Structures are given as structure tokens and as C-alpha cells.
Image 1 (cartoon, rainbow, N blue to C red):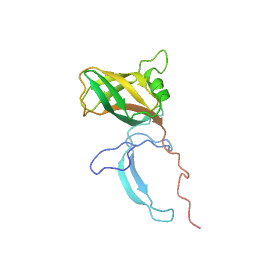
Image 2: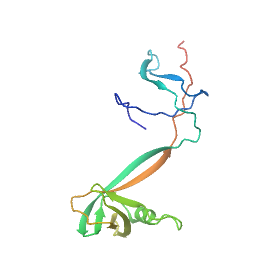
Image 3: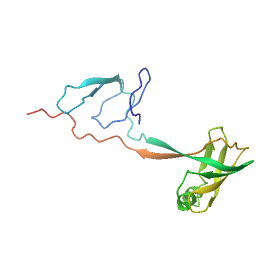
Image 4: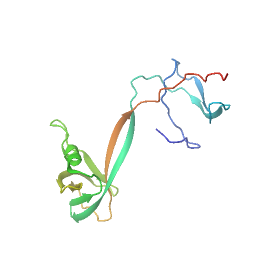
Length: 156
């Protein structure tokens, strides 16, 4: 899920392709337009064949403490309505509340919503600082892009 390949750093890609076996050398080609000549984008080798690999995209929601009282804080600007907060507070009867964390290393949970504009009370495992940022990690399963054409069509 990289936006671009970083020079000198390894990346792993998942694709839909014909069956091939590991240690196969690969060259990734990229073309700017449909009628242009492809250029080399990456060089590597096939790591494994795993149809059960799960690709997750991580999204981080952030909010800011409005009022801090030792281990408790009122957090704003993470949600816009109380219904979203209630869903993250207790998702189902069998699961625990979603964990919130701060950039200074504190862990906590959502206690209750406040008002109608998305503010909430949170409880943390230690003293929270006023300048800290409260974050919530969300994960979503994604799939590789399905190619429109397996091979470039010859121009006529």
C-alpha cells in the first residue's frame, strides 16, 4: 500500500498473476500512457505463493485533549457525532472497547460521549499531558487491483 517506491528500501507487492513458483526473477514495468514504451519500475524476485495473505490498510484518527485531569481527559476533533463514538466504545458483547493511544506512549479507552459534536471522555493508564495527541488505529482489508488487461493490447 505504498504510494511510491522508496529508493534503497525493500517493498512487497501482492498481485493477481499466472501461477509461478518462488525464486523466480521479476521485473515490474510501468508505462506513462497507453501508447508509450514501458520503462523498468522495479526489479526483484518472487517471495512466496500465498492465496491466504491478508493485506491491511492502517488509518489513524487523531484528536486533541481539551481538558486533562490526571488520568482522565476530554478529547475533541476525533469524531463528529456521538453514534460513531458509541460504536467504538463497545462494538459487540464479545469484544472489548477499542484502545486509544497517545504519541507520548499512554494507552486508554473511550469512557463515554459528551454532547452532540463528537467530544468524549477517555481514561488512560498514566498521567496525560495537555500537549499530547490522542490517536485511534483503524484497519481495513484491501485487495490487489484487478488488471484491466493482462497484457497490453497491440495498437492498431
